[in-house]
Length: 546
Image (tube, rainbow, N blue to C red; front, side, top):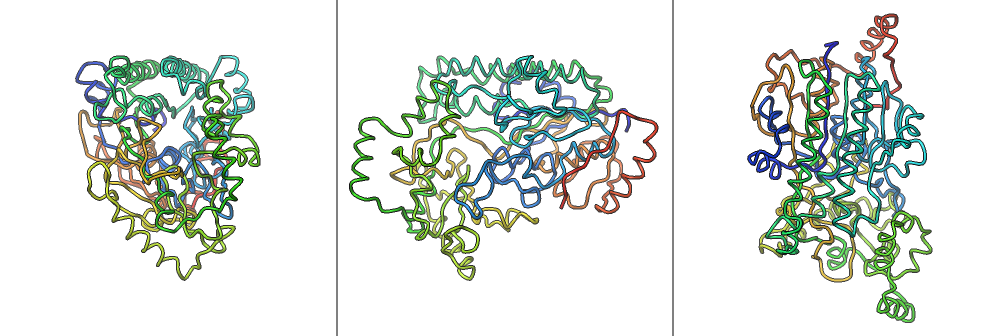
């Protein structure tokens, strides 16, 4: 398989419910051609379907219990204020590490949240969203950072674009052009066998503009529709053209192309405020404020002095990151319509929701700083909370809100399972999401964003040995890495959770599974055979794999 090449183009949040109608209108010729010439799968994301878990599962072929990434932040263990994640928390080999060990050259650009700090690779790596700043080193090799800075490279948009839709569209399209130009530049600059790049416009724009496209959205108006109703068509057309320009650079006779998303996209109608519900049920308690302190906060908020007002001003002047980086003592002194972690009375709290999808953690002794729950009461409390969750009704339909309540052991397996949330909620209605945000009021609220993530995304595979025009059904995001290794005829490690999608291949070769010990022996043999024949390829130290 020495001449084989693979390109993965990630379309963050891409959804067939947007793509298929546009293909019928003739607006996406490149995606149409790829589907006709290859295999079209529905791609099942992770539970919950959020970016850091999903992309990490795609690049490792493993569930979060093995790779250790559960959210945008580290698990709240021995702290109630966990830090943001980085690639240092990933505890499983990524696709580029395995390919580099086999002697293949890799190029990685803009995979969100799982590539900073950048890792040494045989090729290049440019970190994605989650990179704190472009002023430092965000690439491998390190000197590439300055080179890209001079070329005007950007990872994400300025904060000030959030409140201005016209500016947002303009800047999103400019960011897409910058990242496309960078991808093509790097493809020509570095020799490669495998490329993986991600465009995020297909996620960020729907988050903001679903209320302009969906007539059933609570915030929909004819005025919005008249102005922005074709925004999805505009951005997907641009992305389709970008795909076409990338494919112009390659020889498709020996190149496999994988188009994938980390999750889908859908409108967001309501938010289920999990912490509000936990407070209502008596599992979470707030600190008692002295009367004079509460009165001062009330007066300040009536005068417009609140966290929300100050943050809005910071966004408008492009200083949102600065506002979030203020010391805790400053943040605590500013009144807010939302309840923050430091407002919770941890000595009287049994459970609280943390993270992007409002997952529930018990305030467990010997795990949390002010743990209240004994291990002997753990399963009893899990059962009690679960039974109450199943009784909540959907305010939009009057039917049950909850589709499934998972314990950590039902979702994950592996050495990091113990760090996962104790309860994860999956809702029946994808237009409602559970969130950790703790606002003063009811357990349901009108969301700030117009769109959210759905569980099912996009997967299209084409290549010289791929069946044409087939629709094999549903694949899982953990199947991506094993399928890539299958293309390169590399043995699959026995601890992968995903499987190679060999049913879409014309000529199928036997699967080869290998233990970690045998994998190391085979790797050394290949290095010895290649040492004097290919100076361009080298072997890199990889992360510990479980």
